[in-house]
Image (cartoon, rainbow, N blue to C red; front, side, top):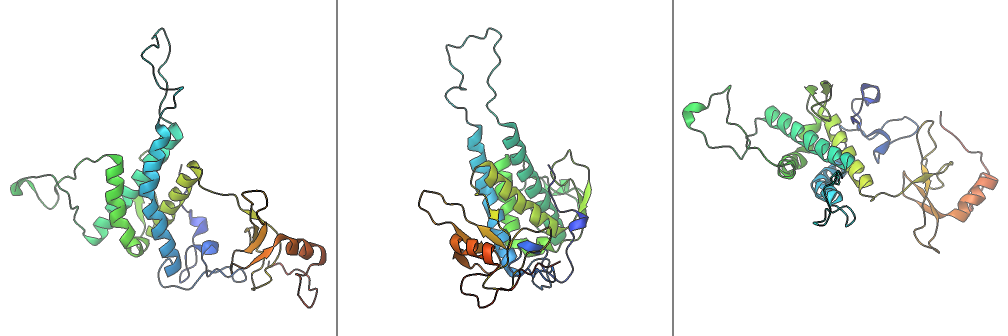
Length: 278
């Protein structure tokens, strides 16, 4: 599955390419934080954390392949026409393969752009190496190849985000070749981390609710969720609060019910109507 950013989502030059996910997103101007790089510092820090997590995601996804007791083959099971149990989850294996492919692809592009050596090389005599025929890289298992790629990419995310468009197979060798920028690679790797967390059941649902923030100038923007969202209680008796995605302010859900009825938050002096940005 190719979930990289398309040309229709190309951000404005001079502003963070994270768009509405950037902490500096301005709903009124529909622009993120100003920066000379494709991503602002805050978004690069978040990307670094997400991309570093891919190594652990790969290991955790591998545990989903383990057979349950009901699936494990038994020495007492006869082979009378019964098919062997399938111990691999196809969608998990495909996600692992895409993680390794994307990471190693952009590792190679980053090495080529900045003339970085490959570190681990197979022993070859000097006379067998030419500029057009470099030493071959060793064949590595998926996990080892991924760790090597992330170790090179994560400290150099700013350099990766600046790479010019290059032709790659975005999500797998079966994909059609396509032009991809370095900043698109960063976002693709982040999405892979999110997909891995979703597959592992480590995400929580977010319930966006209509309305404008009481503490900042954040307003609803057409075709974009937010800025207000409601937390989901984990246990009985847990509070159900309303949060502002822009400034992080929190209020009890009872205040939001008052806001729905009166179009004003408790404590406001006037009952101005909700202002919805175009």
